[in-house]
Length: 241
Image (cartoon, rainbow, N blue to C red; front, side, top):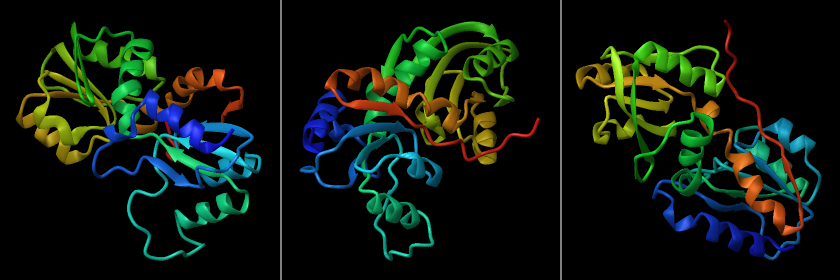
């Protein structure tokens, strides 16, 4: 099957036009006329993953390997070191990032992983009604996502209205209409801002909240007649308890 056929299928499933202006979803490496023998799915690209893939594989990732223009092709520097290996093995790459967040990923994590019922959806943000003590709710979320620890900001004793954005969503904080926000990559100054506007936060991790990308997409691709494997990259962080 040609990449062009798969690209069309993916575009119908989660239109690439939905991506944010700063994003780089779409065909990153390869050409649409290329015939491929198998598809691999992963949240990211890393060296170990590339080494395990067969030649002539189409790798569909959540995060784009290239976000902005490359000014040099230094083969000893990221991400060109990975691009070099991919080209040598004729491995193509399509990224489905902010478009897939909006159409599939946030909904799946909310309902299938966390067991929450969405009452409203606005772009990257899903909303839920909850009436639970903050600590108990945070622990329940951590258990559902297999988090080794919980980092958060507590501004109220109880959680009543919750918002969720997988990955890194703190830039949306000022537009969130909830008393608790679930997202990843919460920084110190994000926490200070949350305190000032009386919004509780629970850090659900970037990798931890988005690695479901592969298993979601696999269900849609299995009827194409191609070999589809989940070959997820590893979480770059190490957590020491």
